[in-house]
Every structure is written in C-alpha cells, then in structure tokens.
Length: 206
Image 1: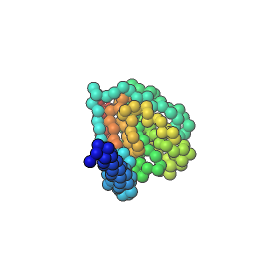
Image 2: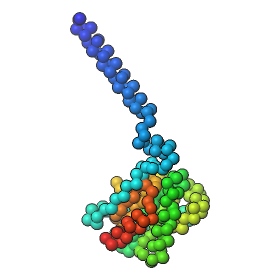
Image 3: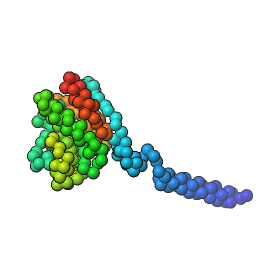
Image 4: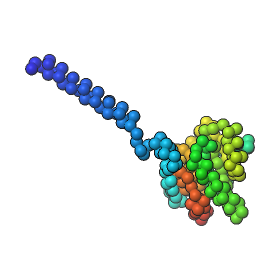
C-alpha cells in the first residue's frame, strides 16, 4: 500500500469515527433521561420539579456570605428593600410562580408559618418573588390562593441576581436571611410548615 493510500485510509477511518461520535451524541440528546428536568415534570408527581430537589441547607453564622440587598416593587405597587429589615428582622424570601404546580402545593404551609410568626410577634418578615410572569397574572393568583404575605413582581426574572452565587435557580425555592441580611438557610423545592418554622427559629437564635 502506498503512502498516499495509507493516508487516505487513515483519514477515512477518522471521518467515520467522528461521524459515529456525532451520531451517539445526537442519540443521547434525543434519548429520554429519567432524571432530567423535563422527564420529572412529565411524571406529574412534582418530585424534583425543575431544579427543586427538596434539599435543605443551613449555613453557620461564620460561613455566611455578604449581606444581600433585595429590592423592587410589590404586586400592590409599593417599593420594598430588604435593607428595611437590616439589623432587626429575619427575612423569609420565597420564589414562586403561578405556573409552578409545587408552588401552589406549598402555599398553605407558607401561609401557616406567616400567620404564626405574626401572631407570636416574632421579628420576621415574609417577601415572595413572583417569578417571570406579569404583575396582573401574579395579582390574580394571589387573590385566588388567598396569599396574605407580600410579593415582589419580577416579570423579567432578574431580582434573584441580588443573591449572587447563592441565587435560587427556579421556583419553588425559599431562603432565610438573618438580621444582617445574609443567606442563613435555603430550601430547594417544596418546604413544609414544620421545616420552615424550624429554619426560622434556628436563624433567630443564631
């Protein structure tokens, strides 16, 4: 076999190998991954919906990052900033959307904790973030679900950038800020009343 023929054979084998790899990649992209976000959503059981996996994280005081300044306009048209709570209140931030089934599931638990902390006069504020939908749709949802804690409107989906690398990736997500405005606890996915109350109490003690 001549040198030219050898080079041709090698080139042809390389091309075939690249074609095979491309075909495998395409097949993988089209195949159904049972752990993918899309497949989890299709199941209808809401487990691990979008990025929420039920993970709970508590951050020790000496490991917390810089204070977060979250600010915007509520669904009622009022301006609000987390700096208003700085030095006095713990702030519970809940990321939600009317298009998110698990968010609807956790509303009664959030409402229970909100009602309880108010009744107990605990230094706690609640603030929702209505993620990626119009304020009109958000207001209609709040009225339907009888949500009594306020929420910021975030049609463009940029408010979560205030949390930097601690930002929640998608609803439902709940973060608890300590009195200094630092993220002290996080819940990814649906949070129960008992879990949220426990997180709040721990942050109040820290």
